[in-house]
Image (cartoon, rainbow, N blue to C red; front, side, top):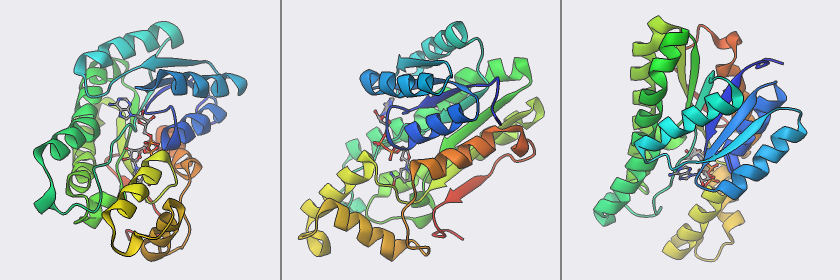
Length: 264
Ligand SMILES: NC(=O)c1ccc[n+]([C@@H]2O[C@H](COP(=O)([O-])OP(=O)(O)OC[C@H]3O[C@@H](n4cnc5c(N)ncnc54)[C@H](O)[C@@H]3O)[C@@H](O)[C@H]2O)c1
């Protein structure tokens, strides 16, 4: 039980990678707050946590709104007693298959708000609390897309490198307060996020036009991932447990790729 007695907040925890992180952390003994736009989904995952014998609370949260973090943190402290771990996982894709010449301003604004500005809001609001307690773990979910400089989804690619850079900035600032701040860069996972990405690639035509969404996904896994297998939410959850545990107490400011060898 590497997280016994700890309380974790996972944004975007209602499904996909976030749900995987929630369940891995609960299995290691943490109580969990699931903060997501999708309250029903968050409640279902909270019930799964309860079935594992841990406490859980579902909080409807829009991570693009700064004020919602104050409400979230107050709710978590009231209901679960404290905050030890913050996982900034909520994220949005942009239409893939669109080079920057076809991007419009809204593509950039939306992705920036959900993927990057949200992490600034989350970290700023939790920082005084972690500093006062001289303890805290922050794990930000980035992506291989940051390092891969993807010409097919520029705002997403730039936003995820932004997550890595901001992770290092917060890590430098918070190291003196015994707060660890790290990022995880997942590879390719069959979540709703990737299912929608595959559908958009099919619509964009080209080599994907006659494929099913799952075939598009498998094609990308085979072409991009040296180990030729997809990643799972549990893979990311296991990495998040490690970075949030005291086993990783001397690891900070790092971006850990969990991607079957894409970025070496
Ligand atoms: N699936 C992949 O292949 C992959 C690869 C690399 C990185 N990622 C990253 O992992 C994270 C999770 O991705 P996923 O695949 O589980 O996606 P997903 O779409 O399945 O789940 C995302 C969750 O975030 C929530 N969310 C979205 N916008 C929100 C907002 N404004 N406020 C609160 N919650 C919000 C959604 O409701 C949803 O529950 C994202 O940051 C994504 O960029 C995914």
